[in-house]
Length: 265
Image (cartoon, rainbow, N blue to C red):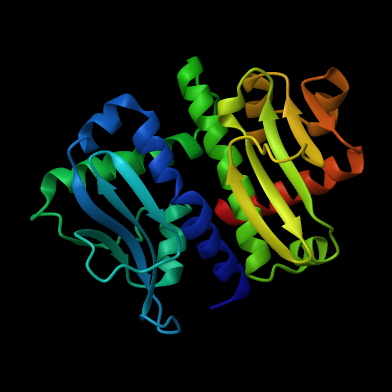
């Protein structure tokens, strides 16, 4: 497996797939389908180099409560999408619908299977959208998903030895970088780094003021940058993007956001 494939599948396992929980709990029509559910879902890829012979992220659902086990294999998943290789897993999540997985447990747990697929399709539609949504509720969900994907994605790349990001974290004292939108604390995310270690978090970091915050004046401004329809420099000059901290740290964080986006698309 080449290094780019490694980085890509780690981002999907640790940053993209965990968004299933966010979507399944934040979208009322989807949340209703899991209200009385008791099921373990898994998305996996066969990998001879892995200890269990495969890599996976799985979800345990009990009465609408989701537990995400990122980059962890479950041996008794009730519903599983199993790809024949890591390469096909990556291809599928990059939009190649020909790289289909083997589906396990679909007939026995058909209702849960269709509900889970509904969440995956919703996630795919959101992250693959070419234009920002019109309604406020979906804007909130999409910005939240992007912030979580970026913070967790940068951390996943660091933990798996991405040269530039590892160099950045290894030289850093204890610092917190965050993403925020004015008036919408529910979409915040952060990344804490120190001496080569990193940890992504959801919500506002409340133990201390973040060292640097990439702050947007509105959801629309956030989506302009996140969906690459706006220029970061122009947005900063116009006040749509506010860098709470030195601008050079914003440029650095922005560059790593692009790295994550490159591996995830």
